[in-house]
Image (cartoon, rainbow, N blue to C red; front, side, top):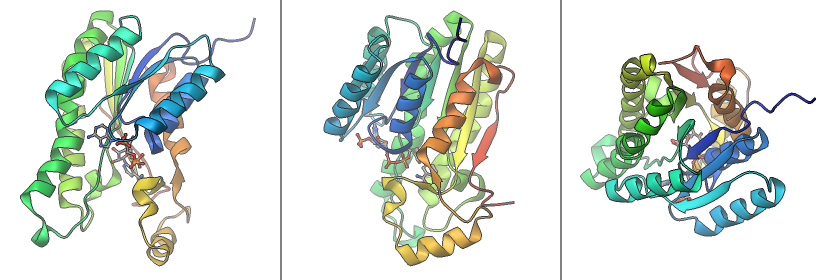
Length: 254
Ligand SMILES: NC(=O)c1ccc[n+]([C@@H]2O[C@H](COP(=O)([O-])OP(=O)(O)OC[C@H]3O[C@@H](n4cnc5c(N)ncnc54)[C@H](OP(=O)(O)O)[C@@H]3O)[C@@H](O)[C@H]2O)c1
């Protein structure tokens, strides 16, 4: 008999699954045998197209796209409830991926820009994780994977709000790992460097070339590179890893 896939039967929730890293995670967890409910904010067309494509490719598995604005507490709670329902109850893997940048020098930043970034990137950790942590704890088995950033570890100019929000995710990850480790739930953070998605597409080519020359591997990573790490952390092979921040950046800072 063929070996079971690494995520066979796992129930996963992914935020911001309509594009970029989130969409790559949705594709890869399904390919590895999981059932998925993923959220989107503005990109309903892309989310529905992805859902339809994946339902055709994996007809035996559940794949649901749901509106999931993560900076809004009530909306996130509704998303969490509907995601659980669509998975038939129970949860094994939560991937907190949704995030935004609003790059601007700190001296010119308006309070609304700061709030938007903090509410989306860090507020979402509360809004989405709080309603979903109990189903994980009840099973005495599960994992939370939070997408932070190399900027949250090292800081980045023009990204004070973003770096602060992503550092906050690291503190949240470590504290929650300590709270729920004894209850069978692991919590880790993945910290990408420069990854080819819409988020980095706006970087002018000359600047991108300069950045690449500073990365030991001399290239940006792909969304699949990050998804592969997320899938590993979601699998049993990572069962003894918790409270860690795993940088995936081609060695950006060594
Ligand atoms: N790309 C990089 O180089 C890089 C590096 C380090 C960390 N990261 C982190 O990786 C994660 C994914 O980034 P990405 O590069 O894939 O970005 P992306 O291509 O811009 O995609 C962002 C995703 O987040 C969703 N999203 C944004 N705001 C949301 C909100 N308020 N509620 C719900 N969903 C929301 C978007 O949904 P809609 O399109 O439906 O609105 C989209 O699916 C982010 O947390 C980002 O900070 C990325």
